[in-house]
Image (cartoon, rainbow, N blue to C red; front, side, top):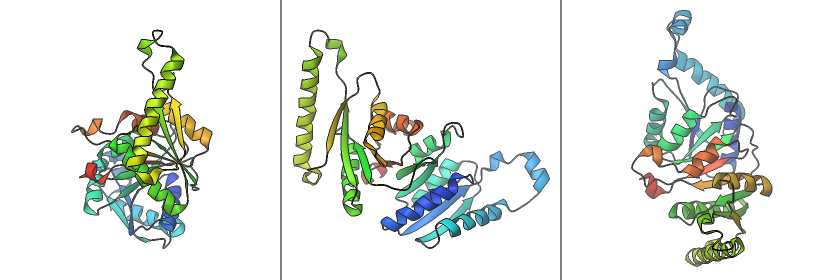
Length: 285
């Protein structure tokens, strides 16, 4: 697991959350990483501080945080780099150390634009767990939205496995839209009934294909005048969930288009629970 630190107040929460993860799941090793963007070191800084060994100073600061909030929860290493492009060096670390999960902090809109986070979601070749600064550590209820794609089914099966290991409550949801261009030729009531019958048929087919998901509560929600991401956020609040799991698509050869609109909108919204963005091994390869 890789934990991305930025030397802000959220670092202590991230390190503590990493400890909580290691206490519940088998994690072989944790890499606490920070990149000093050399392009952001101004001439004034160099003039004031000269040739100070900034990497050593930062590594010492991170060591203090890790010692206090992580201790010996798992084998770990602190990596501080000095590169002009943070996304590239972090992607390289994921490949070099065979990282399966990256833990990424997310500040509120008034503190950060989230631009770097969005880039990392698109470029890191591993699954990502986004931890909002307003989130708590307790995870008991998990929400997994599906659209019946291979991507979302992979996220669902992974979530089922996690829930079985940790004794979590798992809920599936699907958001559907009605083809409004056919109204009033078809009554809205009939259209809703037909849409729900079609989705229910898909869900029953999915249960036959993957019997392990039998018995998981399932919620069908109409998008109506809201986006799919907005409906998911509303369901999070309504159900009191502690974790949201979304599958990431990777079948587009252009990296900037491979994330998907729903995960992007969810990430850019003000959700207050951890967001687990899951790539399958096939997509990563």
